Image (cartoon, rainbow, N blue to C red; front, side, top):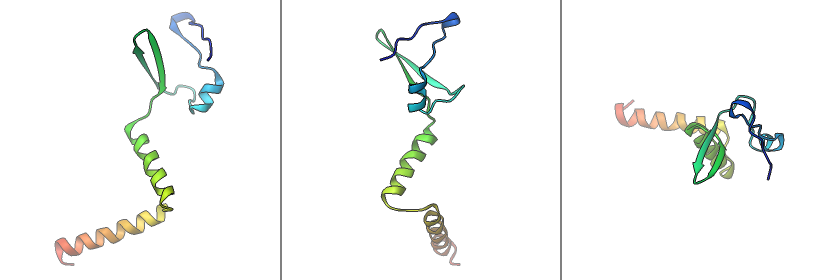
Length: 87
């Protein structure tokens, strides 16, 4: 646990070890949540980032490459076009 001091204008410094662990760079947005009398700071992640990470894990688990996904997409588009337009 790190002891932080509140500076002028309410500023605090997150220790470098925690910034590194959470991949927080300068000007990175964070969430600040009040739970009872406790402040919780978490990295701000957009929904897209969260989905991308889940997708990346699933790809690794299934041993899929980006090229595999593109090829599959082409195949699905071709099948869809044939079904919908008879081409």
